[in-house]
View 1 (cartoon, helix red, strand yellow):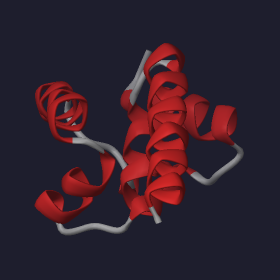
View 2: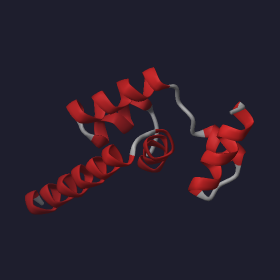
View 3: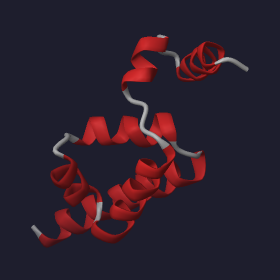
Length: 88
């Protein structure tokens, strides 16, 4: 499979153009570092560390990751939101 076909297939899966999908691509090593950082430090700290907003971080995870981790991240973010609401 060529890179063009791979990118086109991935983009189609997410309902975006190839250019949009490619703009959120990160390599596997960086993805693993990002996942580890989110797991250790949390979503908000990862946004600060990488200098991006939550939507950008979400797209990195969504477009590069596996469904299981994306579900875990969504659950963690929801739990953090509930905790912050309860504390306030």
